[in-house]
Image (cartoon, rainbow, N blue to C red; front, side):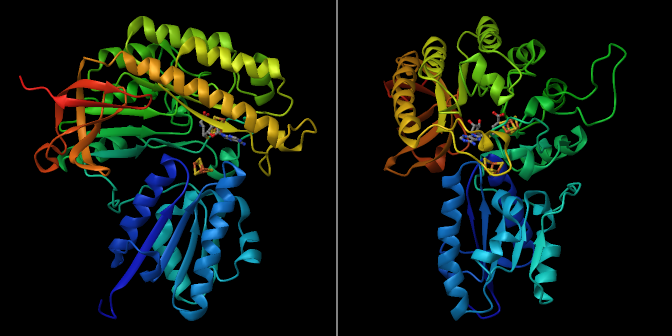
Length: 448
Ligand code: SAH
Ligand code: SF4
Ligand code: F3S
């Protein structure tokens, strides 16, 4: 290590949006001459890209920060940055707990990291949390994978689900233009990326802030139209998108997924609760019947489609019977995967102020019961793969067994099989599935 070299480390918490933002911020740092260091303790700049979706996520950040703040006392040149959703939510308040910070920056400021660091080096402590229009980024992201990539298509969220901090911390919806998205995907295709996941907190809202209405009254820019626009990018062989909102999900989108061969038959559509009263209290804008109709429609067109979702248990006032309605929905639909969470009251959200909060014991008990069912159902769903030949996009070595590689099916099941990563990385190969588990599969390369 020569003294002129400067090292950085980024720790990322939270969702895919944060991971995509971290990749862009890493790109900016590398443009400035910083070099990645695996070990945060060797870094001259440490950035925590934070999540505040639940209290536990937020507390984790403070414990990490505390450790690095101590290190700054020995090394005053260490630059400490808090980015992401906790930064946006807490802003200046973080300084009360960690006065050592150099920069606090909300997610909308990710592309401005270079400018903000310049201000830090001029000697100021900077807080960048005011709402701004996100400027297109010209920096090359430093992507974690060389095979799969995320592409943001819409930032922010205009919904007001009563439990959720995202609209407070990510701001109002801002769609990227289809030209910019197409340009980014073409570059990815040329660089050898095989899979792109289009990202948005409410991806069905894509385009509603862009101008243009067709003669039919339909918006010119929708997720469905975007899929047709980007489908033929050469090199990219798989396209996914997340997260879908049941309120805005359309049959036109289902038809497009069926028609467009590169779009994976995998749908991530959070339902949050299987009870209509709770859905209303959450302000989700649909009923459980509507949700069931969406899934039935998807399965009419694509009987094998994978379905995943998110659900919350222990929302304020949720009765045992209402919770059982969630269990029933999960049991009836049979999800391939379900992200579950116990409700966590968040500052600045309406539901946090309600008096009918449930005890941690009830929430945890329901979470465990739901998780048990989820695993059973996922294991049942995995059964359909047994003996089948699946197309697997190979991503990496299996870290737990070096003789194996791992990748995913079209439906997003993690799959392991014997093989040499040097030969197989980035290829889509036929694998015969010989073993199935709830959330992963094992197989053998199928030779033709
Ligand atoms: N935009 C997505 C979800 C984004 S947040 C959607 O509308 O579905 C990811 C998930 O975190 C949510 O789907 C929800 O299940 C969970 N979540 C959000 N706020 C929460 C809270 N206060 N307590 C527990 N889980 C929460
Ligand atoms: Fe949160 Fe609702 Fe927006 Fe999803 S749609 S990010 S749950 S407010
Ligand atoms: Fe967390 Fe922010 Fe994502 S709160 S879930 S990192 S949008």
